[in-house]
Image 1 (tube, rainbow, N blue to C red):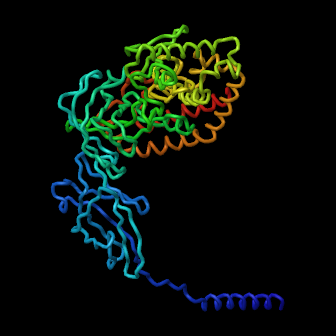
Image 2: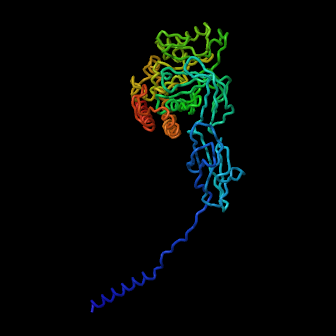
Image 3: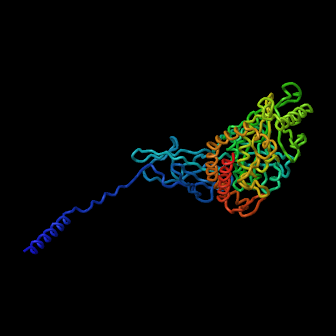
Length: 515
C-alpha cells in the first residue's frame, strides 16, 4: 500500500514537471535593427581621382575621430580629393558650409580639415582629417649653389619650409648660407649643418634669428638624446635652454635624413639673453658684460686663455673682444677659480658665492650628471655667461649625443658613478655643505617634475618618430652596424630607445641613492 502511494506521487510529480515545461513560452528573438549614424566607415585618397599627385591609393588610418594619411615622397602637396563612405548612406558630409562629394570635392589640407558628418536623423559628428607629406614632420628643402664640403666656409643657398600643417610659418622661402659644423660629428656620413639666414626670421614657431643648427644625431640611433636632455633642462626653468624640433631635410632634391633643428648658442634676447657688448665697451660698468664663454679643450678659436688650474676657455661673445675686454674676463675667471680654491671658499660674502650664480651651476650640473654627458667632464661644449654687473653663470646645457651611455671609451658608458662632480670646480664646490644641500633640494624638484616628464617624453617621442626613424634608417642603414662610439649594436629602433630608457632609469636610481 505504501509502495503504491509512493509510485503514485512520483507519477504525479513527473506529470507536473512535463506540464510546466510544455507551457514555457519560447524565447523571443529580438527584431533585427539596422544601425545607422554619423560615422565615416572608410576614407582614402584614390589615385584615379588625384592624377599626378599619388600613384597608388592611400587609406587613411583612424585614431578615434582623428583620420590621418601620409603621401609618399618629400614633394610638397596638400590639395587632394578624398573618397569616403558613411554608415548611414543618407548622411551629409561638410567642411564648414561646403558639402563634400566623395571622389569629387578637392580640399586644401595644408592644415587639418574638420569633416562634419550628419546622419538622416540629424545627429552630427566631427572628424579631424590630416594629410601629411612623407613622414609628417616639417620638411626643409635646401638648395645650395655648390656642395657643402666645409665646416669653415659658407655656401649660399635657400631654404623652403613645408610645415606639414604643424606650425605657422610666415616666411617659407628664406635666403641663407650653409656650412658644416661639429667636431667628430662632421666626419660622419650624415653631416650636421649650420644655417645663417640673410635676415632674421622666425622658424617653426621659434623666435626670430639668423643662426640655426641642424643636428644629425648620426651616432645616437635613438635620434633623441639631445631633445630629451633639452626637455630636462627646460623643466629646471634655467635661464637659457635650447629648443629642439624634429625635421626632415632634403638637400638639392635628395633626402638626407631626420634632423633636430635647434637654436645656435649665441647672445640674443631670445637665446643667451645677456647684454650684447659693443666696440668701445672698454671701461666702467660696460666692461663687465656680457660675455659668453666655452670651456673647450680643443682651443681652436682665436680668442682663448687658460686658468692657472689649466682650464681652457674660449671667448664666444663679443665676436672680436678688445684687449681690455679679454683682460677683464680672463681676470674675472681667474678670480673665480681662486675663490673656489681659497681657504675661505665657503664664505657667503667673500668666497665663491661672490663670483658665481650657484643656482645656474646646479641646474647645469644636474642635467649633465644625469646624462653622464661625456664632454661635460671639462672637455667641451661647457658654456658660461656673465652679464653686465652680474656673476658668472653656467649654460646653456648643450651637446648630448654622447650622453646617456652612448660612449664606449670611458666610464661614462655605465649608469653608475660620478662624472661631472669629479671635475675640479664641482669637486671643490661640493665640499661646501650649503652648496651640497642646495643640490639635494634641486634634485628632489627634478625627481618630482622633470624626470617623470622625461620618461613620458621618451615614449611620446618614440611614437612620434616611428615613420621618420623608418625613413632615416632606410637612408642610413646603420641599426645593425657599429657607429663610433656606440657601446652596443641592437639592430632595431625600438631596442635603441628601450636601452636609452633603461639606462636613464638605472642612472636616476643611482643618483637618488648617492645624492
